[in-house]
Each structure stands twice: as structure tokens, then as C-alpha cells.
Amino acid sequence: MFRKSFIIATTLAVLCTFFSHAQAQVLDRIIGNEPYERVDTPLPLHDGFTTAVPPFARPEALFPHGFGMTDWLRDRGIAFLLDNMNEFAGAITKPTPGFPNYKQGASNAGQYAMSLNIDWERILGLRGFSTHSIAVGRYGTTANRMFGDWLNHASEDYGGGGNVVVHLVMLYGEETLWGGRLDIAAGRMAEMSDFQNSPLFCNFQNGSICGRPKAATDSSFTSGYPASVWGGRIRGRPWRSIYVQAGVYAAERGIYSAAEHRTGFAWLNRHINGVRVPFEIGFEPVFYHAYPGHLKIGGVLMTAPSADNYFDRNGAPFALSRLAPRTHRNNFGAWIMADQHIMNHYHNNKRGITVLGGFLYNDRQTALREWEAYGAVIDRGIFRSRPYDTLGISFTYEKMPIGVQKTGELLIAQNRPLPNHATGVQRHTSVFEVNYAIHVMRGVIFQPLMEYYFRPNGQGNLRDAALLGFKSHIEIF
Image 1 (cartoon, one colour):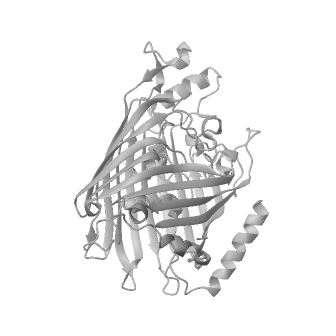
Image 2: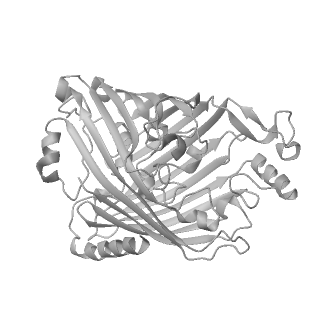
Image 3: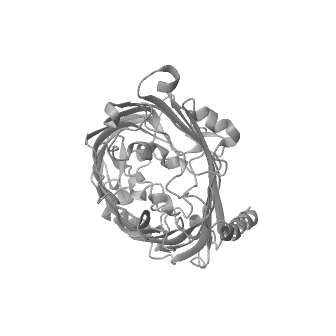
């Protein structure tokens, strides 16, 4: 598997020299970003929609017309997309000695994804109403666990897919009113597709930032791609570049496990024991008509039971009393995120430098990651002859709460096993990534990269780990 993937990736890299004038395709335009992109765009100055339903995504593809099939469907209000994402990572550093299960190895993970968007206004005359569904098939594993890290995947396209040919990610209806000023959606949805998100995050591969910053899904009740729950959200735009949104999502146990949600069609609500209620306000200006930015501030309340990371029900350390941890039913999180395009290359506002930064905070009584801060730079089209290539640099920092640290210290003093697959006290961790995405040809991207893990799994007793790898994305239709 690894040898085959490496040969394919190398072939794509060689091909890039023959397609320097191909059309645009970037990692912002992947199927996983569709739900967010559709509503996370300032209203146009002039309404150019052919229906009240906002236009469906049509990224550059290998077969842009689908041999006539996709064009025929789009003319009738039906948009079908198919893509493949592959992620390879291999450690170039040796693991910490003394742990027989750790090794210096490589991994390959990926997915094929399919989306189907239907404009029911065109088909049945239901003004502003559309439906959306996404399904994936995932394969492979991730290298970070080979050297002892269980906090951040080296390949984000790993896990949650059920190891089946088709796993349903989401299926929901959406109503757009008043020219896009009000948008309502409900069905099988992922909270992280609507909140604490950005299409820029997956210009990187490591799971501390790709998909969404990892602290956003610190709770196993938080639904994020490719998991979904029953939920709904409403987003309003009182002004063209300002939105306010809120949602209610079921807090359901086991949404990422194959035992409970192998195919994504387990809709019987057997394990719902609370709700998550997120809120977010965003400002999306475009300065001087050429420098777009996003600023969002939000928070979430959750009523599902979550275990305290230090105290038992009597207020004593559960690592000493050996009683069950105290349970909390009112947990919270908060975030502030921003990105801003700050420079154009060659007088082209589609090229240039964008900076990202953010801070996420979780309830320190129940969290594994108390807070996370991240920063990144994305430079698109730095070379005149390569207008769609992208250079990316990111750094994330995750801090564990004092309760997690103290519990680890007490368990180690008693020679007892630690939670979270830890083999030492978890205090803080960081992940650095640098990459260069090559626009190989129409619909094809190949991205060599390097990842560096500081204090894997948040532990000081594990060696830092460096990995080399690549991400490839092929938009088929």
C-alpha cells in the first residue's frame, strides 16, 4: 500500500512540470468544506442567483463535465461531486526506547467522498429549499500512534469512517430566505461543519488544525466530519458581512466508533443523553474589494454527562479513592478565530498571503485539552509561473488542565495505568507543519510536507518526532 501510494504521488509530482498553466484547484475546495462554504460567504452586492437557493460548489475537476452526466444533472438542479484525498506520513526519527509497542514507521490514510446537492426549487418549485448529503469511504491508519501520540493525527483523514465501503456523513435539508439573509438547516448534521470552522484549515494535513483545531472536538460528544447527529442551526445576516448563528445538536455517545456508527445510518437515538448548543457571531469584511477576512467569536454549552478529570463524587482525587470520577452536566467551551488576506502577488487578489490565528478554551474540569492556540500562514501563487501552488506553515499549542496533570502524577506514583493511552504525565504539546501544495493539473493537487511533534501525547518522557509525507487531492467530477 505504501509503495503504491509513493509511486502514484511521485508520478503526479513529475507531471506538474508539464501543466504549469492549468486552471485553479486548491485545498479549500474539498467536499468536506461544502456545507460551511455554502453559507460562510458575504452576500453578493447584487443578487445573481437563478433560484433562491445559493449556487452549489463546482470545483475544478479531472472530468469537469462528467462525460455529459454532471452537466445534464446540474441543468436540472442536481449537483454530484466525487473526490479522493490521500495522506501519507512516515517518521524519520526513532521512537522513545523502553516502549516495545512503539516503532519508527509510516502510514497511509485517505478517503473517497461523494456529495449530492439537490435544488428542490428547480425540481418542485419549493422556493429556497435544498437538500445535501455526503458519504465517504475511508481507509488506512495514522503514524502518530506508532511513536506514542494519541492527541493529534499525522493524517487527518483517519478514523470515524466505520471501515465500510460507504459511510453516511450527513443528510439534511436547508431553507434559504430573503436573498440569503436567513438560512435554516436541520437533519443529520455535524456541528463542526457549521461552527469553529474554516475552509483554510485543511491546507494542512495534521489533525491538530486540519478539519478544525483539535480542541474544538475535545469532547467525544462533539460531532465533526465524518460523524453526524440529529441537529439544526439557524444563521442570519443583519448586514452583508456580519452573521449570527446558533444551533442545537444531539450529544450522542459513540458517534466515532464503528461499534455504534459503522455505516452512519444508526438513527434510533439509543445513546443521546444531552444536547450541545453552540452560538457564533462572525464579521467577514473585504477591505478595498481585494483583502477578505473573517473574525468569529463563539461559545457552546453542553448538557451531556462528562467525567471530572481529577475529583470523585466526594471531592477527593479519584486516583487515590479509586471511586468513579464526579460527573458534570453543564460544560462549556469558547473560541475566537480570525484569518485575513494581507498581501496580493502580482496585482492579483486570488494570489497572496493570508494569516490565520485563534484561541479555543474548554471547561477545565472535564477537558483533556484546556486550551489551544494556533497560528498559520498560507502563501498562494508566490512564484509568477505557479499561480495556484500554495506554501503553508502552521503551529499549534495545546495545554492540558491541572486536573489531568495531577491525576497523571498520582497514578504514576502508584504504578497504575494512565487514561488517554498516556505513558507519562500529560502537560502540553505542539505540532508544527510546513508544506507546499503543487497544482499538478486540472483537478489534481500534490502536497509534500513535513510535520514535527513536540512532546508527543503531551508528555515530556517521549522524544520529539519528525515526519515527512504528502497529501494528494483529486477532484474527479
